[in-house]
Image 1 (cartoon, rainbow, N blue to C red):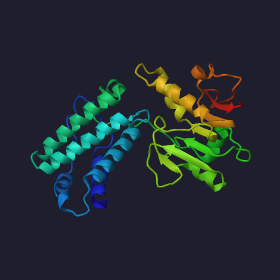
Image 2: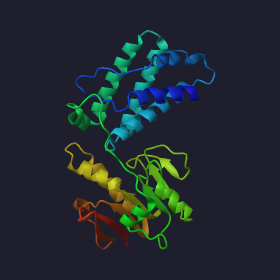
Image 3: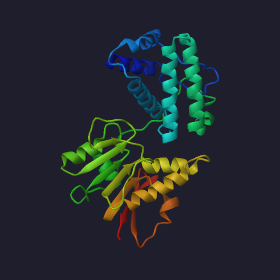
Image 4: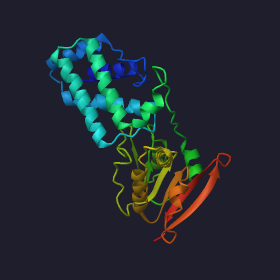
Length: 293
């Protein structure tokens, strides 16, 4: 299967940054080798169609997230994406379509899927070139994150959860090195047993579970994006925000940046203590929400 995975990686890499809504783009570019190899995969003993579909879906989602970190695909969208790749491999196996036709059909299916799953994308990219630049999402050093979020590792309340810990999980690794009980969640898959490959909107944070929840330029950044977008999932984010607060133990804290004044103003001050600190020449603030009862 490793050879098949490598071929999928090459194919996705070959179409890296493709703008599905470009007015001049009608199909994916493809390697003939890709089509030929997949046409013959059923002859291989280790072949598992669903494993191949799952891998392709995972890698394509990672490419979408790389292009625009504000993409968010719910479970329904992911199921539909699974069906798209199931259909692609089915058509390849049927040996009925020419490679060029396969590429066009798959392109159109993905385009329809993205239009439904992320309506803002078509408005954002319809006048762009065939290849688009990514919306950068940087990973900051543990020291900088601790400073921004005002976390004192000598007194941090455990266990700790890093929401959107990043592909490299820098803060999670650092805290574990300091013998602190910590977990992380992120949309990028990981071999780290302490990091769960999960979308934060689908993650069950639990109740009275965490001593400290942290998210630097992650959850709140996306919340702001959806709050100001006409078609944004701001209600979903508001509910998840309150779920995170409900997951804190008494005395526990949610550390995040940037701040969310449009929801923080409504928090019960008898239940939560809120503190702010300006950063980056006072362009944004970091926040600590502590549960006091």
